[in-house]
Length: 282
Ligand SMILES: NC(=O)c1ccc[n+]([C@@H]2O[C@H](COP(=O)([O-])OP(=O)(O)OC[C@H]3O[C@@H](n4cnc5c(N)ncnc54)[C@H](OP(=O)(O)O)[C@@H]3O)[C@@H](O)[C@H]2O)c1
Image (cartoon, rainbow, N blue to C red):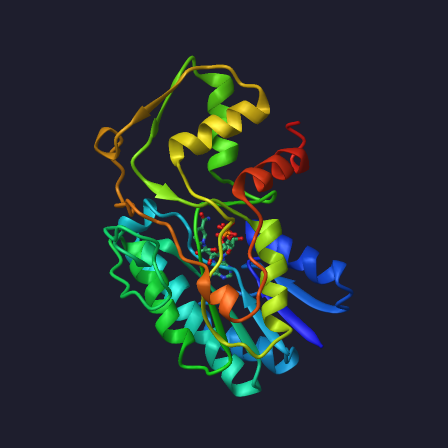
């Protein structure tokens, strides 16, 4: 059974391949832009002629949220056209297709956790591109769409690594304390994604680590575990302007996992502890 994983050089793709290997999958094709540019339709068609997969786990994306505001064409090309090219092949060869989406498809104004059927209303170019990617994905019946948020993994850049660096460089830090969400450890998420492809329970899911926090609380926990002792001050989003608008409420309800018998991810504090061990901070 051949499994194609895109974005293998990124955070999530790296861990998905690792999870597949650990479960004994033999025929795994982890690819990134040097192997296949997903925006090049001819290349994509030729690639799948030679590599017909049982499932595609699509982790490649344009993920620079702020840069996307100035690079809309590139972002849309990768996240929408690239996804479309892959979905067409999944349809042609009847492969299962896993699409990774984001909390950024929502506006963040809801006062309770977002359910899978809440209406997306992206507030940024990146969020819009990921939502349009969802719309491409649902054209193929055998789809799993999973929305995640605040991702951290061994292989790539993320908030945790940035805070660890700033914790060494700065005398104090100001961190936003009025955006709420849940971190997602790619190691934990990969287990769920491989669980998905071993079923036919297609549909939309939300999948982050359990429990919620603000970026400020996240930072405090990183510093607590890593024994970094600089002061961290809570600030408002309005005190930390960014090019792309972030949702105030990014909390995603995981009830669709329960309904379909999938195991939720562990608590984010537990995940963070394991992650800091994995990257040899503790
Ligand atoms: N990071 C987050 O906080 C977050 C939050 C919610 C959802 N997500 C979603 O989760 C998924 C995985 O994210 P991640 O953090 O693992 O991403 P990542 O670390 O940025 O990895 C994405 C990979 O895709 C590759 N890629 C970009 N353009 C490509 C193209 N045209 N053809 C083939 N490959 C291409 C990138 O290569 P280059 O580095 O060379 O461009 C990179 O290796 C993405 O779908 C993302 O949208 C992420």
